[in-house]
Image (cartoon, rainbow, N blue to C red; front, side, top):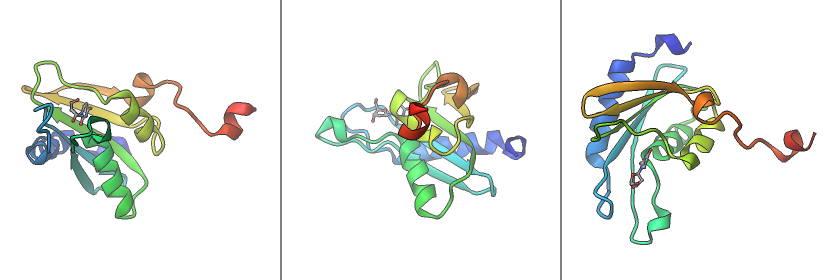
Length: 136
Ligand code: THU
């Protein structure tokens, strides 16, 4: 399923999504583009807040937008920021992404385009699972 995703196209969507980032406190704009298994793409950007802890990352915005539109199966996400070394999702976003696909493909994009593709299962090998499962 994942092999069907046009990662270059997904990367371009993430890069464009970055333009809408509301990053007035960090001045660090991030864009994300999430590919559903049905071939649609949902984008997100980071949205910061004067109460810093309320800030939401681009990845979680993209996932929430897709969920709100009725999608729950995802193949890949691209994350773009204007850095030399491309950013990888933060810990909170890794757990948030793992809820829907613990082996999601993640394309990390910096200034020079896609420079790193990783599996979420490598970044977060042991996501928190349900109480029931972890208690067994
Ligand atoms: N940020 C993201 O949107 N995604 C990431 O993967 C890393 C961090 C945002 C949060 C905050 O608005 C800014 O980048 C600086 O941390």
